[in-house]
Amino acid sequence: MAPAITTSDVDLAGRARALGRRAWKIVRVNWHLGVTAFGGPPVHFKIFNQKFVQKTKWIDEQVFQEIFSISQSLSGPASTKMLYCINLIQGGFMAALVSFMIWSLPGAIGMFGLSIGVANIDETLPRPVYALLSGLNSATVGVIALAAVELSQKAITDKLTRIVVFLTAAAGMLYNALWYFPVLMLVSGWATLVFDYRWIHRPLSALVRAVKRQRARPPSSSRQETGAAELELESNVPPPPRSELPISEDESRSRGKANSESTAENEPRIVPVELRLNMSWKTGTAIIACFFLSFIVAMVLRSVLPQPGPPLLYRLFSNMYLAGTIIFGGGPVVIPLLREYVVAEGWVSPRDFLIGLALIQAFPGPNFNIAVFLGSLTAINGGYSSVAGALIAWVGIFSPGLILVHGTMGIWSAARNRRWVKSMLRGVNAGAVGLIFTAVYRIFLVGYIDEGFQSGRSLGDDPWWVVTTATSYVGGRYFKLNAPSAILLGGAMGLLRHGVVNA
Image (cartoon, rainbow, N blue to C red; front, side, top):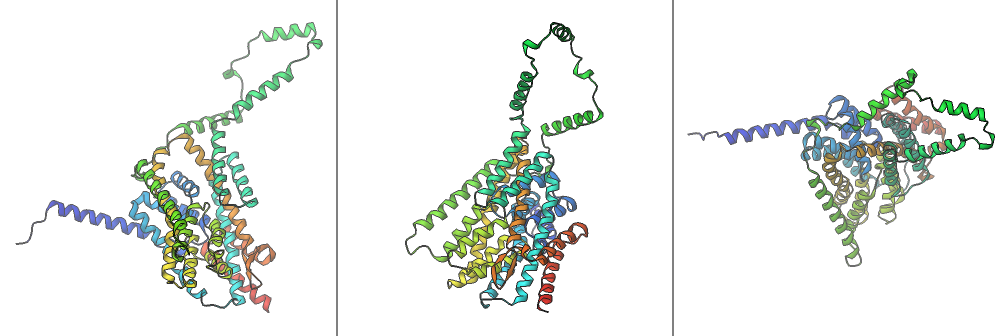
């Protein structure tokens, strides 16, 4: 006799089918991003907006801007955190984890394979390879510049945010330090907060009125009796009510716009149920506290382990864990820091590091995958397994940002409707976009690579690379050329230059 099918069995089967459908949905939407998203974080944000806001409508534009600001405000890989948060809202933790794997693994596997090849090449590369890498870098600069322009169109909502974008971009070009970028974004947030709450407007207005009254007061010796009588007579006539004064059409429009904006600002943000994250702020706070505890333990262990010091692989992990914790600004910022943590330690040669720098610009997915390349070379040069080194570096550099943003999303669910939070968010968003223009400038300075200067030179040293950058920008902006095609076109232009110069 066959066993009876109970209600619990039916419920379990239904939940399994629902879980399977949800998993398939996540895979179906995310599967291609890890192999088609070229150009680094600025371009990734543009791709995510088109994919998740305009096409699939998993989130709306407001939620997109909120997640963008959160991702930029926290340490770690910016575009990876944003994709993680979008899938976290849509399907929960497992969906976010699966999307991260789909997003990061293709590029990580590719960088691992390249590390094996680089470990077995000669000191110098063939000249066509340098030309190809320079072309790829040049086109990448154009693609990132286009993404910065398009993101700024959404971040700039008034004159203040336009000024914030400009000033943060200029400040980022003038100085570079680990603490500098988060400070710039914090100052940007405070600037919009002070402006929106009129903390400076009122004192300045009172001061201006006092100065005007002082200047308008005539000297007593010059007053004539007749003039005084006229002024006294005029002063006794009450002014017309404000509501009866005639106003121009432009003033009427500006008043209506200001009133509507003020009303919209004061109204609470109503988030649809499907866009809400089912996690309390207490859980988010606990996750963040556990992360910082693990960070302290990792750093203390490195300091107290007996000499000659911790094993190489543990030092590699601690360096990557530290880098993933203190880096703000995403991929363009992680490159110089990893140079200090890997090349300065003597684990990877400067030549190999710069090869990895050039190649990661032409790879899809997150720029933080360069850690896989460096971890594998570190393990090979130290006599360890390349797979172990790559895996340790990959986990070490990605985990801090993902843990922090997961906890922050829980806190954000409780804080997102507060007016001061939305005000600061506007400034942080504008500051983050300004720093994308800084990233364009930084990559422009080291994009030209050749046998005589393997450390990289400015693309401006050769007009051909400037033309390549402009071609990728114009192709994307006016001819709808996507990022992978633009970058491949840049590589072809690099090879073309090599052929013409040699001929």
